[in-house]
Image 1 (cartoon, rainbow, N blue to C red):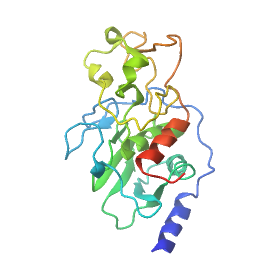
Image 2: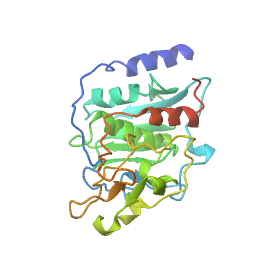
Image 3: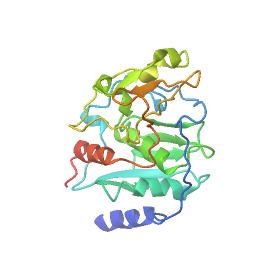
Length: 244
């Protein structure tokens, strides 16, 4: 069984050094998803109400030193970009993505109507939508996969009011819920403007004016991370009990 896992891990790392487009979908919300979304790009759970992913059952199970997460990637994809994003978790966390064979619970990557994911492990086929035209960038893959691991957006964390100001007058009507603060387990890590999970300051703006401002530095630009920050990585390792 260990040999099979090693073989799968080797296979999923084939495109680890593939080139990736340097631009990104800056809003992370490319197109409107057929699935009703909450918090911008998170699909509501079909088995739980839309609450923060804090329950043990929301995490993917650990086997020994690693958390093996089976994946299936639709054949219509530029697979190397998704694979490169998945493999990026291998070098800094105990998350290991393996090819789905007969696994019951797995992530199914396909080109849907936008960039979105469920929050934490759902059970069974778990869709992650990365639209071919607009979502296939390294940071977007990391962002949506982090949702699937159980992580919410940075600017809705429980202590956000100490760091950011929300400007509701600039938000598109009907999208205010994307900025609602929730009770999160911050795992002893600081608020991080460089997190790959942070909105841009113009997210869901109706008039081109900021919807979010840094309280310490209102001119600060943020939400344009090209890859996971040190804090993003630290949170994954803490949540999943990865050894240092």
